[in-house]
Length: 237
Image: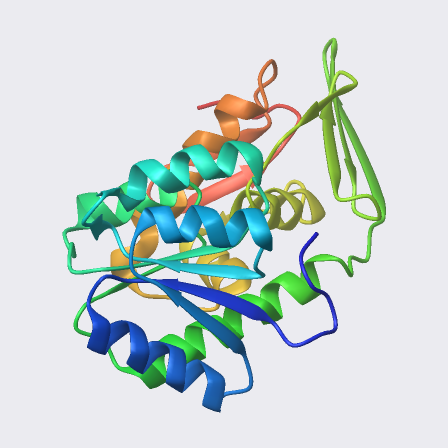
């Protein structure tokens, strides 16, 4: 289980010594317990010993691809928060990172202060995710039913539990709590990710695509072209 209410443990996986040590030191100054690993092999051993509260993951490592590693890791720990930290700054790389379940993505070179601010924002979102105004929400569409139990952090479709990443959970619960209301991509970014950069709006589309695939059968989220999305039992796209 992830540490709650204790000093947060963060793994910084980066093969460049100066960058890794600098990030670890800055996180420690900011009140986190930060541990560095330079390879995927070291990261695997560390995770087997203790599951952290957050992984800050480089992509291009000497013994493998960080994207592929996180893809496999998320199958075991879908709720484990991940921030990709990489020189691969193309939009397609950023989209891929979010498709793999990342909670954030920061491109090198970056300011250590910016990284710490993103880490703090991520932990704020996670702390809020367990406190919802609607403990239990139920919806039906034809023969299909969807239930969101915030107290148990559990979503089911026709009685079958669906596994969502942390980011997907925030988006689904936010849309469901605003059932029938038109929600823009910018609103989703602001409420679910704490930032509103236009270049990140495609990230919302990527998450919605992944969520829809997981919530079938049933069309729960309607696209309003040119604006955003609406949670609706009559949703269509």
